[in-house]
Image (cartoon, rainbow, N blue to C red; front, top):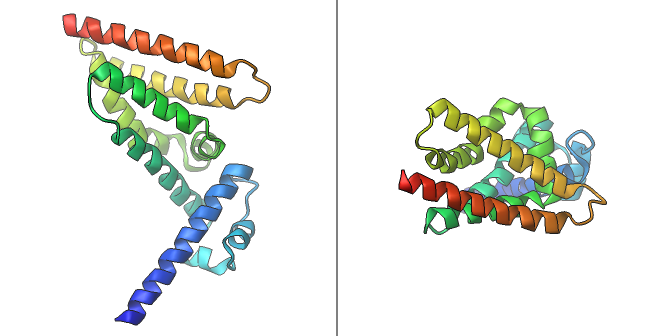
Length: 197
């Protein structure tokens, strides 16, 4: 019994080490440039356990993407519910906090749609969560229109995160703060009109 537990612990430790190493290298180098050999070396092991636990590079990358997306999903889920306008401002801040992280940008926004397909991103828990948050803001519109608006907002958020990452973009932080203020004001206005209607 204790032997089985020890094997399980060894397995969990190895998987955790591989995921941590892969997340760092995929985030720093990108999917194409990061090799399984580099990931194994950084994790302090041979390449064999990676193939044993994950199968290949793409499946390992999928596991990393899911782990990083789950962190964002949890952060958004943990927002305290209050007035909806306040919640939306908090969701915006959480997404932009992740968007400022170069590993998140490289893994989730740059490489994942290319390596795993855009369809997977559209169906991911994070995107579905954002859509669920946005849809109630436009109660008078057709469901298809509301979905289209939500998808446009997600695309805009992604673009903002990428713009914030551009080197030499002086004043981008101030621009981001000004834009955040405008978005909060607009969201408040939208919600007020929805309530009045």
